[in-house]
Length: 531
Image (cartoon, rainbow, N blue to C red; front, side):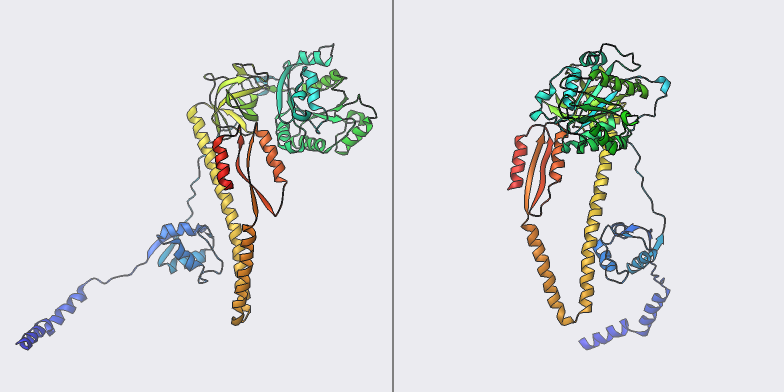
């Protein structure tokens, strides 16, 4: 019975008519066409961009690219594919049809803030000259300024050596009185002079260079008993780089056994030709300690300032430069600023300030003597309080229209900084990867040149070399440092000194660096790093 049912089933289901209907229905069905998907690519596309466009893992693309089927060069996810033939071959191997187009470059809109265009000379007004005092350590720079303003700053310095940038403005009448001048000078500029006292130690080269960029006249102090020294030569080089006129003060002429001609000839060696040698640079012999010939030196500075016809725009938004920054107890984050254009006013009569990535609402303005003021004119120095972050010395200060605009500029500058850091890290990674790839290719070539029985020995030698290198790096001693200073200039000087240290046995690492007192949280963080 079962056999009969099976025969009926076979006859019905597998009859010739069934085959006819079945295959006739297949013949009328639409044929399947296998068309490859088009993929838009461009010359210079990276592996990461190609992976995103094709929706394929970058490891698969790298495996195909580095398998010597496409190119013999090794690549990573950030590698750019510049060869059109390589891109076309790679895309076809991935199962796509390449369609080349021009690369779409997304340009970032420039939201940065810049200084205003120069003001017409007829709209400018006279301003005080800015005089930077430079010279070798212990040549009498601070003593000279103490004599001109009747102060004793040198007594307050540790070891009698200046370690900070001093900036102050004094009236011309008081300077003439302290210099012993009996004939007042009719001058065309403002009745004040702004001095910048710079440290002479070699570690403070950054402060000296910034002072030279911000100044109008360089007062080069050279000790008559010591002559031209390394920091003297450095100051001359800075003056030439910034095209700053020089007035030379040959100090300590009250000492015995001095040779003035030796000093003048030493300056001429570095192309500083004084009037004694037929040049156009004024050189005045003085004694800051005994107050000798200070009036003649003041006349030389005034003459140089009048020849330059120093003027500034007193209208519009304020501009300036950061000379120094620090954190003061009871005031907060402050910056010593030199105003170069416009009038800086106290908030709310002033817009927000920006210097680098630091934003400020100027709630307190102090003179160099600590006196509160409501405004600061061009050519004058003031301490500005109200910074959210400490600005860097040398940063350009710009007053902006609104807080919204200040925040926009701050975000843009931070974004640019991050992009630069990413590019720097990527270049460093590519350099290390290229070295590693080069060693790997050399190893592969060496393997091909040897017999297969010698490969194991070569691999053992390579592994031993790599393990010894790793062991050497792991045994290197690291010295973590926490550096906190009173002002940013001192922090910069400390880092400059430490950068000259080089040893294969110990490596210096900066855990925490900053300006201000050391906090308990920073101590805990340093202890955690040290283990």
